[in-house]
Length: 317
Ligand SMILES: Nc1nc(=O)c2c([nH]1)NC[C@@H]1CN(c3ccc(C(=O)N[C@@H](CCC(=O)O)C(=O)O)cc3)C=[N+]21
Image (cartoon, rainbow, N blue to C red; front, side, top):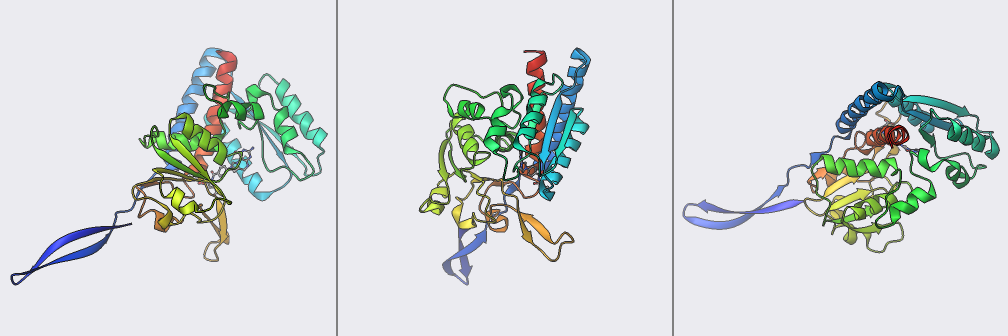
């Protein structure tokens, strides 16, 4: 955080050694919004090429059950991103009272629809519906979220690759690659062990030859473990949990957190903060992603990419 700079100060022939505490310059900001925009243009070009060659567009089915405001916002963003890239979106909006059978039937219909190349069931589902049952019903070759246990299993196995990698961790790796951060041979810490981010992020880093430690809510001495890392992926879902003191000088920090905290000065009444204390960490890290505008936009770009790749596999295997 502070680089000690020793300078010799001469005062009328008297020389004293004085240490000036100097704050390091702030980290480079990894602009996820801009990188995602570039990727979305690349996808759009590939979609146009597919149209020209096969007279087919990729199709994404987005299933939402219930009226959660945050889920509706995310789903709207996903559908808009599809439209902009030339991906056809198939909308299925179901009431919160839908039965498990009805949701299962919606998935089966999309499995059977040859114009649908990807199926996304927005999570969380209402409590009376078993998420695992629904996710396992999605055809492996249309599992653009990468949440099917067989895709997750392949991700965990050495020498095997899943058909789809979950969008958020895939976006984290893409951010590192496009920011010229070497992964091979590095020490990495992943904070959080969720099925959709922490665990798959750790698997991906390990597949790229990083040495990975997963730190979670029951880890004794989490701070000292994270502090050894060259690359930190913060995905604990806990606002500003990773402090400046947790981060090694020069580390690269990818912040997956999207926590809303009350803020009376905003017209919405809240603001988004990450899992890192950004204002502290930015003076220690060499590169850091902001929240918002970091990993979030990449999640959507990777969803489009997975859908495109699913369609490409179907038409040009
Ligand atoms: N089946 C399924 N797949 C998902 O991928 C999935 C899901 N369910 N459920 C919810 C989470 C959350 N998620 C986000 C997507 C985009 C942003 C995003 O673009 N955030 C913007 C800010 C948006 C805002 O201002 O609210 C940003 O970080 O810049 C965030 C979070 C996908 N999820």
